[in-house]
Amino acid sequence: MRRLLARLWRALRPVQNRLMWFVNAKVVVGVTGVVRDDEGRVLLLRHRMWPPGRQWGLPSGYAHKGEDFRQTVVREVKEETDLDVVAGRLVMLNSGLRNRRLEVAYEARLLGGELRIDPMEILEARWCRPDELPEDIQPVCHPLIQGETTP
Image 1 (cartoon, helix red, strand yellow):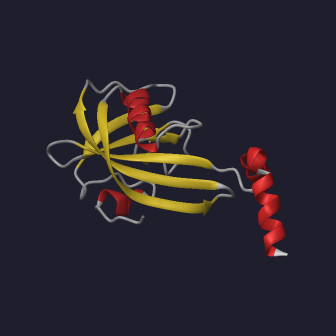
Image 2 (spheres, helix red, strand yellow; image 1 turned 180 degrees about the vertical axis):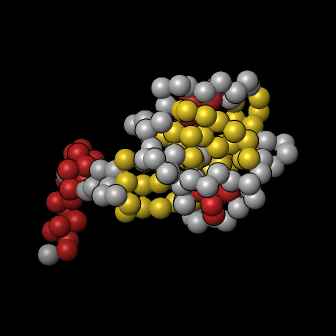
């Protein structure tokens, strides 16, 4: 029986990817950047669309189809703040969140640019020391800012 199934699977090689797409979960990937400057401060944003009392957080957004997640960090930081960064090591990988959602976070280093927020998404931006975070920051940010990794 196993040999028969293996032969059948090999015969389906031209359409295997389509079959796998239909039978497996589709996910949305949320990508976060822990952006630090040369002084060790972290970039925090007060997001317009996030719930009151939890609006402060790290730059983040959704990966585009086929986009490398490190590039998502670079793109999202640029879109939200006009700053240039380079993404570094993976510091968080969580799956199974909120029904078919994957969350990843990367460290990122500031390269340059002038801080200009996108007022459609961001209400305010500030550089904070890890021990001076806003009160209403998203809870997931604390371990990321403190340098705790969870891949």
